[in-house]
Length: 324
Ligand code: ATP
Image 1 (cartoon, helix red, strand yellow):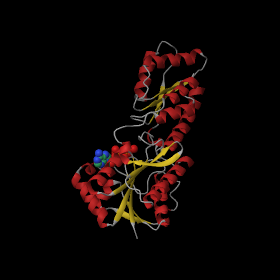
Image 2 (tube, helix red, strand yellow):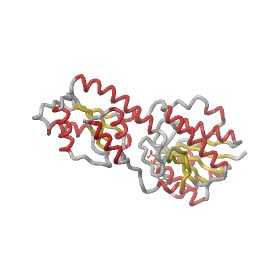
Image 3 (spheres, rainbow, N blue to C red):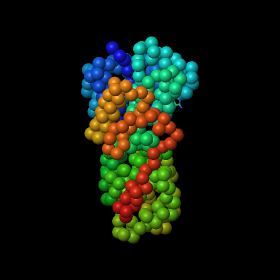
Image 4 (spheres, rainbow, N blue to C red):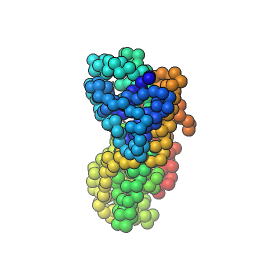
């Protein structure tokens, strides 16, 4: 029986299990056996794996995290460890490696292709949704919904106490989460790394909200722009004579990354997994799964290298029009 390898690599996110299930079940449907490596590339190097059959992925579709575990594996940047990984792959009789990961993981996989001729297939995941070449990456929708639910709750307090509240969401280099969460929660101000807003404009917007009789304001800030704590301190200080009161803040952190995936993430993860295996069965080699104009498509892995996706300015403008 032909064998494929499968691993999850980089940061975890909701929807990984749905994708693992989809790959394993599609493989099984086409008469392939799946070898699941534990802790991403670390499992490849250490030959740590388990055979995944149709039944072994039952009951995981709705669970966050990854049953294969995930890790960062710095040794994979070193040729001798990639060689060791490849030898393990060959010994197991694996014909192609499926990597559910982000940009970095795709680069690791690409090196296995370049150096040893292994057929590698990337399936994009990251809550940041910033992988270049695909309009969707597994995990984003759940992260946005998690953040939205948290902000809805914070908004109750913000409105009742007529406060300015800063909420920091994930996104070190990317503003997609902040942008969509800002829209979904009706945030008065949204701050993202791609379109910097000077501090005096933030102040003006807070004062405008107040002058319009809106007793409260929610500011959603992507972590890559500023820390919510520092921003709250600076703005409290700068607006101390304006009767704004103490500006509170909340860092949402890891709650955005966990929990049961949304229906959208389950469906996208399932579609990506089925597509990846079906293209492999059809003879395609060395590609990444991508989402483009409403369809799941195939692209060379290298498309995602060296660039990150940036939000459309139009979407940012919608936020501005609706916010105040
Ligand atoms: P995310 O950033 O969303 O968590 P990612 O896949 O981009 O996902 P990284 O931490 O960048 O996460 O990479 C995951 C793993 O991929 C690394 O720990 C390493 O094992 C491997 N990797 C990353 N970049 C390279 C590279 N240039 N060469 C070889 N391996 C790499």
